[in-house]
Image 1 (tube, rainbow, N blue to C red):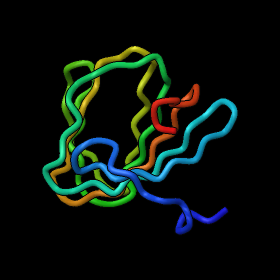
Image 2: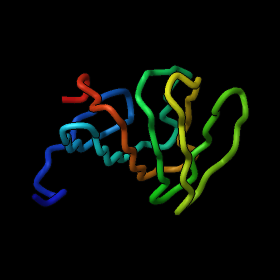
Image 3: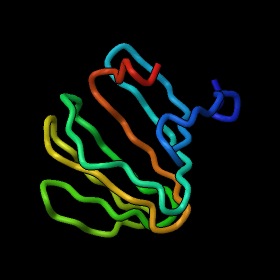
Image 4: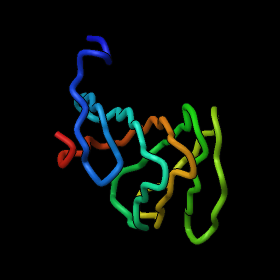
Length: 103
């Protein structure tokens, strides 16, 4: 498997994702347009996010920070979070269990 062979889907406005699904995890590679936002939300999945490139403003439990290349955010299950791309970004997310809605 090679990432360049996985089709990209715009799963929300400005968020273009390539998804790999295992039995217990989803690994998501995002190309995010500048200004694209994910409204605050929560889900039962545990999530880890890494900023691969760009500047991404992220809010977790009411606390907002700007994350840049190499930063990693751990998002526990059912915690309120959301974000906005301050520049074009590349992000990587891992979710457990599998994000069925991303299949």
